[in-house]
Length: 192
Image (cartoon, helix red, strand yellow):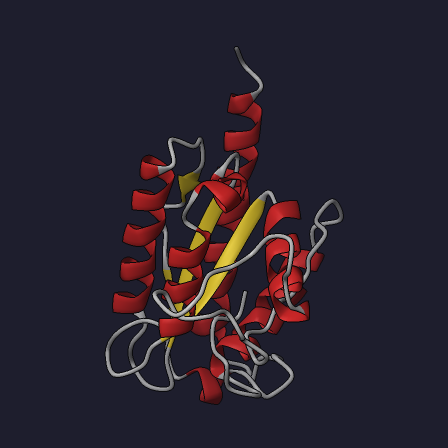
């Protein structure tokens, strides 16, 4: 999930780049969700209604529900996280949407136009862990985060690498680690 509402955002570039890496794994189905048409009401000004979802809300919640492994690609705004993603997590973090936090693996990457991304990734990791705990669900947040530094220099608008081998290696390591955690989590969950 590209958690930026901006068109052609850095997080969307990263989403498409990771999509290409993930599709190299033959058993992996991938869908990219963009927050470009984000319309989730702010906490305190409305709430998500599972019986009256907008097209965007339906798209994001269905993709999340169907996924075993959910990547949140979080833009860094003024050294903090995406308000849209935090709002979505707050809105979905109750009984009506608790299933979104059950039997999932979450992987979080922070995206930055400069040298950043750690803080938003850590903030989202904290909120996800708190929601899983509060909702008493069985999921895991992968401990490995990734910081996409200088995203617009390392990826073009289509999410193609511009050739930075160190950037590519870090992205691949993040994806591989996340897939391994998801595989171990799913195998482990079958043991009673």
